[in-house]
Length: 268
Image (cartoon, rainbow, N blue to C red):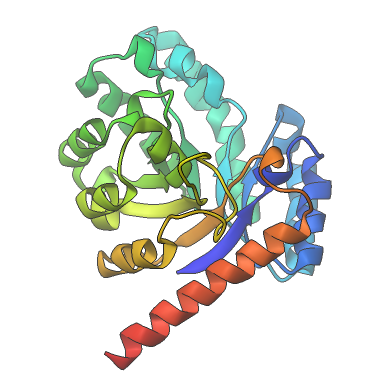
């Protein structure tokens, strides 16, 4: 288990500038949120890879800018759009190979126009199969506006797809959906391979870690007991903090918690 920070935290700053800021702060693991097609090209991606290498950092996960159109392109039932979108997503998967990034974050369909579960799982499998040929794992994120907002839906997905089902657990999205992150961790278990971390309290559903009431240490301990050994990525919105230095402080806070958990487990 390791701590990291998403480039999405500093949106809408340009991606390369954001990544350089994170490297200067000493962030050692990232999730890259790519914001437009030109940022998927080989030259641009190689530039990102050099920034990461110079900072001694890794890119665990990759988040596409196309998530708002996934409902139409993948889940509306129009076969030619699915085929075309699978071809387009190869741009992302190729970029990920250049970044040595393994986890692709999928939002999926909107809950207000939900498609049948079996059809959803079939399309997810097709996306996963395409990604697998690039050495990439597709992971379904729980998102409040999407079909994946429901733990019941994610449970069905896990049961239907077996080992092919992998998940990104986003804490703020769970709170917005009325789901308990601890329950989600317990139900989805070791199929959770990536975490979007934030804190919250009664007034706000997205805060810097340590600024709310969420028991992050207990949560990460419960994940580790289930076999989780992935990245815990700080993912906030730009209005949730004042200065980039606060991201570093939160990164250090998460890193300290993770190290304490490891120490406790090795002494048991």
